[in-house]
Every structure is written in C-alpha cells, then in structure tokens.
Figure (cartoon, helix red, strand yellow):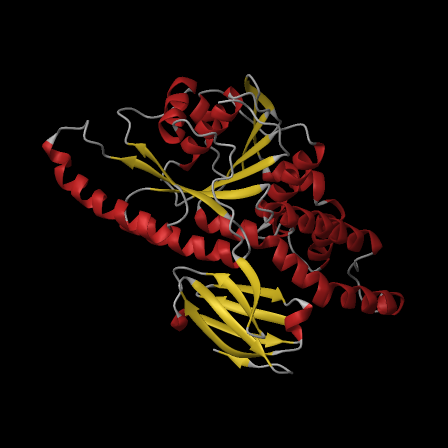
Length: 401
C-alpha cells in the first residue's frame, strides 16, 4: 500500500460521548502518518483526550507526536484572546457601562458557541497553510459537533439578512446617539472584525462540504441509544450538505471472548450490527473489537488501526455521494435532500423569497434556492427512499408542512 499524491484531505470523527471516538481518530491519524502522509491530529473537544490517548502531553500549540504526525488540542480561551479582539472588548465595555461587574462582563463577552467558531477558524489556518497532507479532527460529542458544523450557515444567514442593515443604520445615527447615551457604540473596527470572521467561516464551509476534500466518519457502539443518536446526526449532516464516508463500529464483542457472561451481549450486539449495516447502507462500515485493555499508546493505537482498516488506506474517500441534488425529470424540477431517518411527521418546510427553510426536530436549515427553483412554488414534498423529495412547478411560491 503506497502513499498517493493528492490534495489536502480532511476527516472529521464524531459520535456519542464514550464510544471511543478519540481512540479511533488517533489510530487513524497514526496510520496515515505511518503511510508517509504529513498528518495533523486536532481535538476540538473541550474535554481533550489526545494527551491520554498518546500518553504524552499535547497542548494548545502544535506539537510533534511521531514521525509525520503532529497534534494540537484547541484551547478556546487562547483562541478567543487571539481572534475575538475588538468584538470582545466592545461587548465587555458595553456591559460594564450597563452596571455589570468587571468579571461578569468579561465572562459574558464570550458567547455560547465560541468554541465551535474558533475551532473552525483554527482549521482554516492549518488548511490554508498547506503544510499537511491530512487533517484529522477529533470532534466533540455529537451534539456539539452538529452545532460546530452549522455555524457557517447561521453566520451566513445573519450576514445576509441583518448585518448590513445594522451597519448602515448605526453609521447614520452614531453621531447623534453619542450625545444621548453613555455606553459605547460599535465602531468600524468591530464591524470589520465580524466581517473577517464571516469570510473565514464561509470559506471553511465550502471546504468541509467538498466531497473531494472532506468527509465525516461516525463512530458508534452496537447499542440502541448510540445507534439512534447516530441516525439523527447522519440526517442532520445530510441536511447541511456534509458527506459521511464511513461508519466505524467500535467495541464489538468477538468470538475470541469465551466467557459465558458475554453470551447474551453477543446476541444483542448481533442484532444491532445487522441494524447498523441495513440502516447506513451503502456507506462502508468498518469494525473494531472490544480490546482486552484500554487502547492507549502508539503500539495499541497502531494495532487498532490495522484491525479497522485492514488493507485499506484511511485517507481514501470511501463514499462521496452528495446529500443535496437538483434534478430535472419530465419537465419538473426536484430538490433531493438525503434524510434516511426522517419521516414526514417530523419534517416541516416553507419558502420565503428565494429561501427554503427545513425544520427537522430541533434542527433548522435555511437553504438558498438555486435560480432555477427560486421562482417556482412547491407542488409536493414527500419522504421517498431515504430522500426528502421536493417537487417544484408553476410560478410564485408555495408552502408545505
């Protein structure tokens, strides 16, 4: 198996907390480096585990972990100080003027979701530098990962719908308002910082949804609750345009374990393994056993990688079907969004102007329609063969729910 020359590859590992995601991500990164790829292993989880996985200190600064392998654990506080700059200072000063204690104002100047924003910005930096062949990302547990990957879409909606209006209005009234209010107003430096953040976030969204560059790998255990969460996450990922190229089932109880205590567990896992293979097909599925000891240190991580990937190259793109398509059939246009675990009862959608909003359980996606669809109304929407199929026809706009 030889290293092939190709452009930068990004692989994100996600899964429910406790499934062994960090071990699988670390094993994959180690195998990539052993094949000669210049590999970076990043952790975006606030509760970093890379240091424990490799039994060595890995901190906020990029550090050599082995031949061809570097590691870094994103320190959100450090990144905020480095990148948040004028925005954080403005919010802090504003809150102090409103009577808040200095320490409280400092804390509140960092919004929920900042971890996700600055993890993405750090990824942008490493990607743009081009010093690595492969970037492996050990993401936070599923819920935080989904929030991370939705950040660019939320930012885009805000910038297109609200930001420029705020900027123009404030520019006009700032000279007058300064005479009547005793708190600071955002200046051009604040708006410029927000705009810079937005440009970087949009840039990384294009990279992360390019199936020739990026893919998500889901780590699961053969357990009912874990599988259900993976199904929900997979639907969300498709809704936002992210390609999942593999599912890795971890901690399978194999026949080499002969203790009768595990007989019933083997039967339960057998059913769950069947369900995973049926539900996620045709996405390739890889497997890892329940090891007799904790998988830490390079030797055991290397063994795990060999067990999972066998003779496959982990840098390979195992599956790259785009989850969102526009097709024309018999004069009608259809928007197809892969949502294999959704039902009509839990999906709601409507059109406003050229913007299609899709709501799936607790998640909402605003999708700007292509020009060919933006002047047509929704005639029908159904869930068919794992796809949300939206039929467009006629003029004006319609609504389906």
